[in-house]
Length: 215
Image 1 (tube, rainbow, N blue to C red):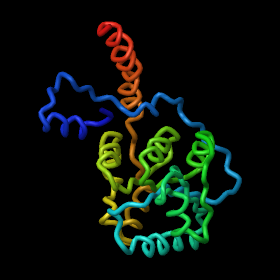
Image 2 (cartoon, helix red, strand yellow):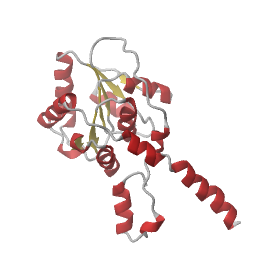
Image 3 (tube, rainbow, N blue to C red):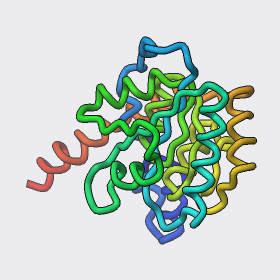
Image 4 (cartoon, rainbow, N blue to C red):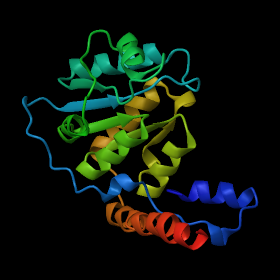
């Protein structure tokens, strides 16, 4: 598992603890992301949102007001669509919410890195938008629609920068964002890298050594 929440869930279901190993997402095996060269001097915020039944019905209005205030304050806002599959894919959903703002639909991992590493802050529902922000040293605020997002924020040291999707409000979003800029979390990057380093050996042992023993 890549977090303690998953470990506790599985042990609670009766799976022996000795059969479980807590590591971290394999994305932490990537080298640190170098900050991208900015094309403009404006501060930049990247959103990575997705459709979810957990979002409040007035989320589009909340987002519109929040982004409008940021733009009026001189921010550049970019929406990053990280998954294009399905009728609720990010480009369609994001496009409906952000008609007047650029929506980046990357065609490669490098483009995702470029977008996030050039930001001054990231607000993400997509788990890997937060992981890549951590790798780039960019402060992030997690909007949790799933336990995996909550668990990552807790494991990484950003538990104070986590908002349940169903409880997002304009006031709460503004307060959390202001705090993020003033007191960004100290992410436990080395700790997560050390955990993720176990993954190749676990994979090798399970698929290669285990497979040869079974034969």
